[in-house]
Structures are given as structure tokens and as C-alpha cells.
Image (cartoon, rainbow, N blue to C red; front, side, top):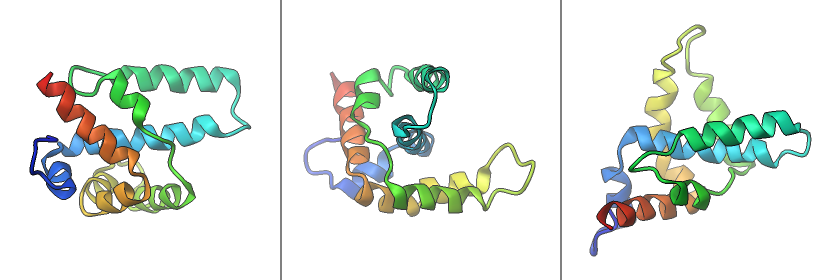
Length: 126
């Protein structure tokens, strides 16, 4: 994924959409963790759920490099979520938007997402 000669755009395009979504959800969750109003129980619950996302491809080191979303990104997420019809648990509309062309905007706003993509490629080859 971070093979020599690949541009950032090519790396993102090669990165599976499901994992793009995971990256965004991690940054979104980390934003929640940073909120002063969150209680200890909720904080622990979020941390446990984040750890459950790790696997042989999306490892703990990748999880650690992702920085929390900023205000603009959070607003973009809210707008994307608003596209999902009520009761649609698949959230297909927001998934398609977030993991498609909009993902490039998230990468520009939060460069840690690209670092995570590069790290996934490096760890995969290791």
C-alpha cells in the first residue's frame, strides 16, 4: 500500500472502503473521547470498542496514530449520517459518501488518516 512510487491518492484508492470507514469512525470516536463531559464508564466503553476493531490488517499501532476529528470533519460526518433513511441500519448512503470521494477531504483535514493507511501497508509487508 505504501509501495515506492505510489501517490497518496493511489494509496487511498487501494485501501479497502470498509477500512476507510473504520478510520473515520476511529477519528470520530477519538473526538468523543476528548470531550470533557464524557464519563469514565462511557470513556472505557469507547476504548474497548476501539480495541475490538483491530485485526491482522488494522492493528493497534494503526489505531494509535489516528488523531481525533476536528469540528469541520464532525460536521461532515453529521451531514453524511443525515442521508441515511430512518430505520436503515445498513447506513449505506452515508457509507458510500464517506468512503468515496469525500474520504479525500477527510484525509486533507486529518493527515493522520493517510499515516494510518501507510502504516497498514508497512505492517502488512512486515
